Amino acid sequence: MNKEQITGKFDQAAGKLKEKVGEAVGNQKLANAGVAEQIKGAAKETWGHVKDTASKTQDTEGASLKQRTENAAHDIREKIASTAQNVKEKIGNKLDDTQHDR
Image (cartoon, rainbow, N blue to C red; front, side, top):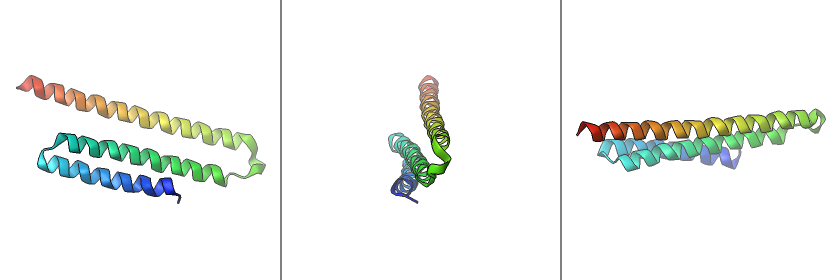
């Protein structure tokens, strides 16, 4: 386990705590910041895993394994970015619904 994986797990735990505290006290900004920190932590942890995998790659396996690792890293980044965008849209929709209900 490398530094990115450890700090990623820590960021996720801290984000979860912020989210729960924000929800408990009715502070949406804090709750949203907690979710954002969880996403950041997941990205960091995943990047650390990619780095570990790449560093363990044997030279005998050549560029094809390196390319597959880079492709996997790209796919993971795309999924994280897509998830973050979906979360942003869902929160925006909920806020819009709340404003219309008033």
